[in-house]
Image (tube, rainbow, N blue to C red):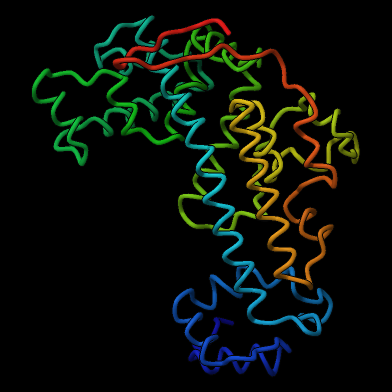
Length: 330
């Protein structure tokens, strides 16, 4: 049966009288529903505050607590996106460098499906990728730099095109790049294998989309998994049927990915900001326990010990000068 339309006052009446949510300031609550929408606020964040059996709110839960949690999730998206963008820039920079090193600066090189790792299994996906790359540099373009290079030089080098590509496209470029290119890039991340790096990039790219589109993040889950990493064992994450129960396809898996993909100092800042957000929302939402929150986020109880353990080898440093990557040994 389709959902009926309710006015803001009817929505509040239902929350207060049927669902037993405490609403102390109806005028404020109506203003919030108008601003955020019932579906985004209540539909997105009610579960942590309700009795699963009765579908009613835990006694004493207030409308303000749910609003606070909504804004916690918003801040969570902002935090994750900030550091994911660091990863995105790094990956884009390295792919453009090593691809151009191997095939040259002509745009025909990255638009040639034969310059990717083609097999019967992935031929269709490579063709789709190349087609999407062609569309990204087509003129007229929304990007002035694409139009400038296309009309002035008749060529859009990959290091120019990269800014117009999505992280999803870049993830696919890495996935289907020749083995030697994938190996060179993965080595820059402290000795990750090509497969490990691809899986870490995949979950980070998926998380980026959630953040960029304003979707619910705290309970993030995807079908794909990251590989079993040394950090899973070092944090003594429990297993069920031989599989780690957290840190594989949830938000903590993204945290693990960032641990391997960004520098130590950046990760320290990220972890400090994340811990602050978690502690702050637990103060604002007394009806949400720490264990309950961490479980929904996919975090083990000792997640904040993640900095105690070293990653793999120390990655080599890469710097960008005048659109050319200069590589230094660490």
